[in-house]
Image (cartoon, rainbow, N blue to C red):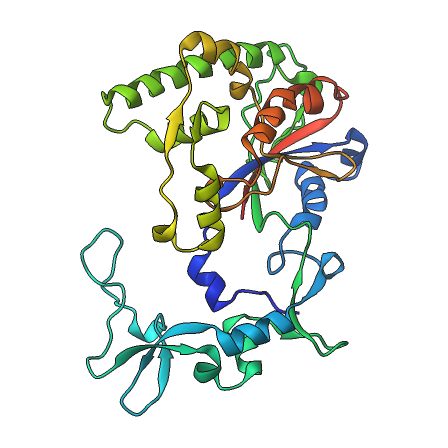
Amino acid sequence: MCARVSVEKNRVNKMTHFRILVKIDANRLEYHCVADAVEEMITPFFVEGACCRPEFLKFVVTEDEDLKKFVDDTMDAVRYPDGSLKHEYDECFRNVAYQVGYDVPKYIYPEECTHCRITFAEFYGDFETFEMKWLANEKNKQTGEWGYWHNPQGYIDYYMIEETGNLPRIESADSENHVDPDEEYHPHIDGIKVGDIDFGTMEREIDIEARKWWRQYQNVKSGRQEDAPIFGIHYDLCRMGIRTVSNRGEFEASRKEFPHDQDKWVKPEWCDGPLNFKILSTIHRTYFTYNTYAVIEKDGTWHAPGRMGIFAEGDETNEAAAEWRSSFMERFLLNEDEDTVVVALDCHI
């Protein structure tokens, strides 16, 4: 069973971090520490090639589509005078002096070589080599078909436990009721009982976060602050439905047709709706409530508005994201048993 990391995937693969909340039944902690309980509950959601166990994997057959790609599709290559070929991004061409931000080429090619575009069949010679080297696929030993192992419910490749996930604890909470970190083995691992969460403080923090965001928005709009978080503000406006793309149909179609070539995307035409602080603090107030991208319930079920992708951008609609934020507290925390322990994870994909 191989970890599927293909040449093609490596070229376009990006990474992102996102936060999830794990809810642990108090009874489970009679036999597990917080770290072990989290590990047990998160294991089914690892992607293939990470820490995913074999029982969660299914074999995906791709042989027919792979064969068509092998025969018809082309790739960029470098041809030597003797006729031998190498991939355009072969490590032998990498410039050791290259650094991001410096005006030096990432790859250097010998003068006697020529660039060419050829079929995969011409480059690899046989289908089996193409499957293994380009696609990182394997042949199923039982069926003899080519494909790869995949976890249909794989959402992360690693995680770290945060101390409390920014959940405030009421000052009067009895320290004996806390799920304290094991200083010797897990100095940064902590959980908090739902009954110890200071929901009053969380409610007040909504207005604080809204005012903080409004000041940043004003700085971005006026250009007063050079390091203003322009991208973050733009993302928030889209999520709140204030900023939309008038030519969304054409824009999304171009993204779908050329997923890895942004130069070919149709330029989005942005239009903004009305926004002032009164609208922000009333209509869009729930945007600033505490939430995580996903939640693992006590019974092990995964809940999320969509699937997280690259650049911390999920595939959920703005409507689904808004519904998730507005219902998060009531759905996952306010009505939860007071002895339930919640732990925030910083996840990566």
